[in-house]
Image 1 (cartoon, rainbow, N blue to C red):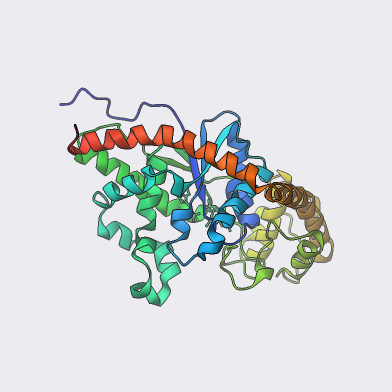
Image 2: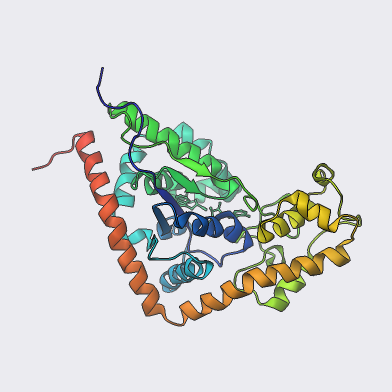
Length: 343
Ligand code: AMP
Ligand code: TRP
């Protein structure tokens, strides 16, 4: 029997990542960025722009660095404070790719075959997708565990990837007789905004890759465009109901009410109490006003940050150094645990 503690007893740490591909939308804001800001005051937080994940599908080389700056500007504009949280691009910290390789040898093919996001993204073309897209969740596990992160704020769509990270951590600890070396990271998903749906179809999530721009509110949309998108959002001929149970079977209505609740910090029930009996002719303008009130300041700040790319680069470079300082020794320990040659 080993005398090592059976469970991880190290410090808590928050880690999350956002891909620099396409512009961010309201789902990213409510499902991720807003949570990042809420956590930074009383947690040790690391927020990564996951450019290595982005290149699992084609990214134009001339645009990639600017896409990274764009996400950094969105983090900063949403209120992530580099004095409190580390912000950096994944490709600048080598620990990610190194640990991903070790994890490739821990994770099982059967585990990856179950990943629904790959199936969704690849569709019928899985043979033509990059190996990286298939391996994407292993790199994600390496992202989290190279910081021994214990908590991961993400939207609902990342739940399965987080379960895989836990499985990889547990198998590594077990295979190498290193109980408690890696924590089993917990997703922080709950709360309003964990799954914001398309404005055009309440059964699909709001997504960067939806061909219809009317399906999402981008953080770069101006007030007129936001109002237009909400006006055109799918609803139904009914009125806002009184009780949460009555939202069942009305996915678009449920989504609009959920967005209002998440943005205003109220519960769905409170929003229903406020608007019960009203039609969408009354509710939609109120929702548009709230969206503009919350999004416009972020858009303005984002533009201000983007007008000074050197400042963004300084923040990212400092963040990358700070991230390496945490991640490199952890990967060094992994090398020792696995028994690689060293002098
Ligand atoms: P991505 O843009 O796919 O890198 O996602 C960045 C973060 O936003 C992840 O934590 C996702 O889970 C979250 N996210 C993406 N789409 C949505 C959505 N429609 N609703 C809530 N969260 C989302
Ligand atoms: N897969 C995540 C997404 O598409 C992005 C991501 C990469 C991530 N690495 C991560 C999220 C680590 C949380 C933790 O949204």
